[in-house]
Image 1 (cartoon, one colour):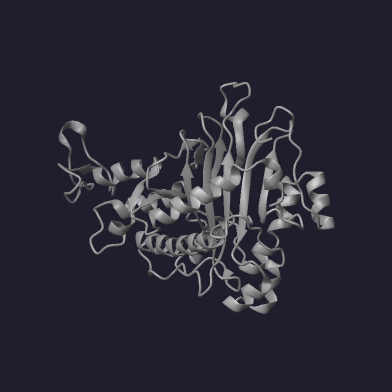
Image 2 (image 1 turned 90 degrees about the horizontal axis):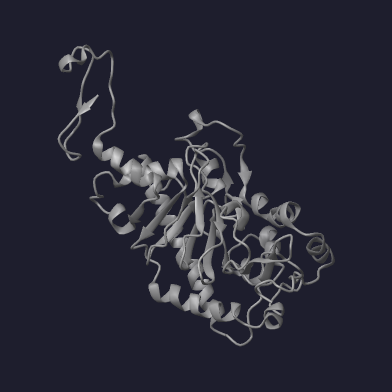
Length: 385
């Protein structure tokens, strides 16, 4: 049992030879949780908003690292402010991609991947009734295999970029802005992984992404819900529950409602608040593998609501393609589950086939097989037509 007057004071530990008033003998009890720790654990359960500069500074606020550790272990998401990604870069990208996604559908269809690649260019995603659930714009790290090789990607991996990015012809600046966004998010991913190492009490470079981490970007636009409302979130899912296959994912969200939800270990769903200036960092499956299951991959979904389109931009960050991910030394002795070593190249090169197997519609799979663009059919009453 702990008795204390404030969270800042060291806890007093009652052992088996002490008596608490009329309560009698306390037998072999040693509870290590202080009121301060309980408060920060509750914050973690509610998704902490972390001042990254303060957390990485020489004098991190008391209990903050515990809150970060708790959130990483139980939920798999934190929000960060003072994150180092320039506000003007975020605003510039949002403005430019917003203009692209507001173009007439026929114009956007010309931005679909010529070869039907689901992670290049523009596409729409309808539900089984032809109602638009989301539309997205995808960008790979490099435009071509030649660009990848020039940047240092080993030649045997350059085929990952044989399907080119698709850029709108009337905005020559979007490409440069997007690549600067990718680079800023990659740097933030490295800092957050350093924060996780610090929160766990291990060496700061434990979660090393390598000289050339693998990254990709997706912007999702979610329409306002204009169909009958049953009152159940499960009937208004715009993005099904999943965990990302990355190490970490850097997310920015815009909208007038908390449509993004995250699932803690008890199976419930928590809304992720829209905090001005904050970015969300989701732990991915590779970070779970690195830690032998200790750090939880953030399972999340998106539900409809609000009166305006909700937008999010995700940058998925992986170690370099030649990295083998397996439980690292601090976690290997106590790791559980199936965490066999995986080469990042093998992990990401199978993504398209795995996606199409799980979510692809027959016409989309056919387009991919035949190397043709895919534009989904929408119902006459759907948003996005």
